Length: 164
Image (cartoon, one colour):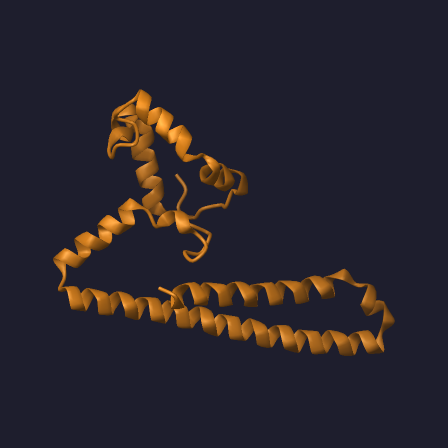
C-alpha cells in the first residue's frame, strides 16, 4: 500500500474529467443504484476498502487550487457537519484564517521565485556577454523558464486562495 504523495498520472486525470454526464445518465437509467453512496462496498467490498485506505494514507501531488475535482459532495457535507458541531461564527473565522495563511505562504513563494528569476537572469546575461558559448547552453534558458513558471504558478494559487 502506498503512503505519501500520489504519483500524478495525466492520462488518468484526463480520462476522469472526460467521462461525461451522458455515460453516467445511461448507467443510472440501467441500474437505479448506480452512483449511490456506499454501493462500492456492495459491488466490490475488497476494492472499496482498498480505495478508502489509499485515500486516507496518500495526498494529492497537485495543489488544491488546481484540483477542482476535490470540491465534490463529500467536501460540502463535511463542511456542513463541522459547521453544525462547532459554533458557526467560530468555524467561519477559523476557515478564513487558514485560507488567508495558506494564501500568504503562496504569495511569499511567488515573490521569492520572481526575485530568483530576476537575479538568475541578470547573472546569465552577464555570463553571456563575457562568454559567447554561454548563449548556446540550453540549460540557462530552461532554468529561467522554470523559475518564471514556478513564480506564475504560485501567484495563480495565491489568487485562487484570495478569491475564496
